[in-house]
Image 1 (cartoon, helix red, strand yellow):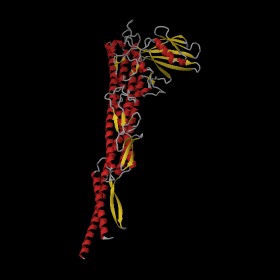
Image 2: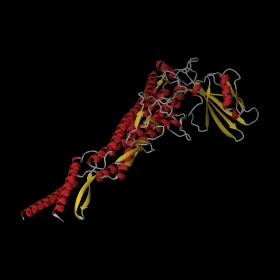
Image 3: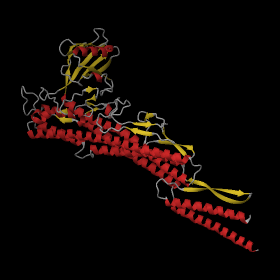
Length: 621
């Protein structure tokens, strides 16, 4: 090897070690910088004329395991989803109160029924009557407050989605900008590697908000998709649009129909001008946004529906009176007085198909708003029950005509012989159906109706009848409006007196016993739409058992959410540790590299000094 070749080799060595020293210095300086990946020089050997050897630095590489990176992005999305759900479930449990404390819904309900038990023992005690009404007001206020708090949580979720959308838009804008900058570079130098670190940081931010899939498209650029296949960003960024609603109430719902929607939806505005509704297409399945959507649109509305079921059951259990039909001819004709029915009250009819000896049940709901017909998503606790809505606003002739039209296929016949009497007949001797029973459930609106039933709880100041309108059922949000009847508060004696002629004695325990029994011992039917029970096996039981079941179910859900969060944290932390081990900066290791590079630099410098001395010697000869 000639001296010139040796000199070239040492110079290339010095340049390589200088580049390495700069990279090590950068690694150490950014050891604690979030998102920084350890860098290393890309070196190649070269020869000139078949003699000598040089080293050349062609770029900078990031020490990165792409498989771990992809897995970490997936699990980060799942971790953010689990964390947000656990947070909201924890806040929901705070609304219900700590188990065993005096502030829980179950404790407040039990205090009310205990007061009723005392009233049944001493009905003539004015002090006991006051205690009953006071505890009833506390119970109503507990339901009112829980409703406000649940809707506040839904409002927080709505605002959380808006904030997440802003963060996602900024992350996508930055990813597109960096992609464009990388697209004009020809290789991977230190500046390009730094840009890719920044881009990965924005990708990680986006993965916390939603589930994404990252695809490399060349020139150090990437394209980001939802897991459902919708492209979010490449060299151009799409943008999310979220039309947040400022007020959230129990009736606020999301719908794919803009005319029906009263909650914000997320639209993806594409660079080409197109758009797609990401909620309608279910494109977001994980991350914070998915967690917010689940709480806003499913978990919290279900919690509200359970409170509404309790409020409706309390009101109807005390105010509903069953009026049995008059059997004119057994199996063939029943007359039923329906004059006392109000909107939402029902007719219950059972008949037997004699050909198969199968008994059928029909529930007819009085509807005074024709726009609400036909009824949607209406069911009872009996999965074999056929529920029909009939418009009563046109009078008895219209009611009869509607019933004959709706139930004509059953061979039953309906007529109106006089007044408010509904006559239900079989098939006129063809012996295809037998009528078993018919009754009407009517709402008592007077405190002195002659029976123990009374409108103890009301909807604001109006009777609760279960009316259904085009805006929804009266039960929707009832827990936020339920109150003790102002008439009872004004005259507590009505807790005892249920008729004025003859006047109910002040020591009569008929009504207190009725109230207590209805609220604690009577089996009531609860709609499976609230999430307790299923359509195939609806929950039927007493109010206390429903409350216990609801609180137990919510507690289990909160515990499961907390367990999922813990498990997801373990997975994310383990992957993050693997990523740190693979890509993070170990200062001790970098210092060892520094020593090695310093030695290499010194060796190359020594070679250059020696060559200089040889050249000096040659020049003196």
